[in-house]
Image (cartoon, rainbow, N blue to C red; front, side, top):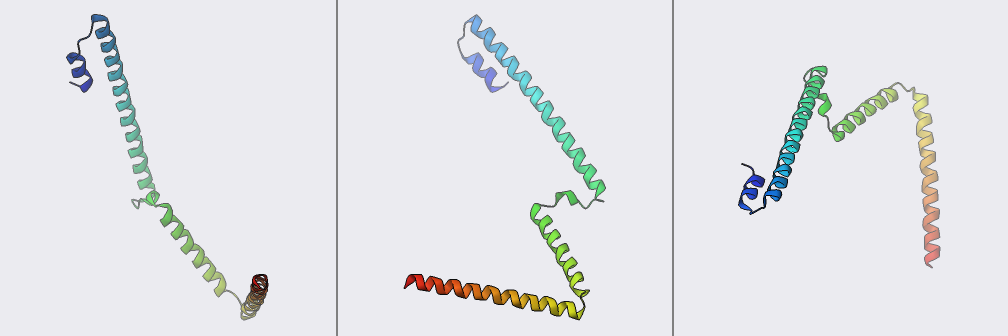
Length: 124
């Protein structure tokens, strides 16, 4: 016996109120049953889908990767790709890259020095 049924029996209701309360109780039971059925079907679908994905990934449960692990995996792949690319550079290409890098560093350091000097001038 549900809580709602026991409360109905304890209360002193007129016959009209009792009928309305019983209708309400029946409606509530129907809704609960339908909801349980929907939930059961939904859980079944989820279970079938996860089994299907496991079969696709040969039991490795690849679909269960979290976002963080997925990002880490992609990052490692990118790093390996870059390393392979760098290994294929000729010595001349490496020198050009280093030269460009040094020039950029000098430019940045000059701009930072200028900014710092301007800040000091403003403070004076």
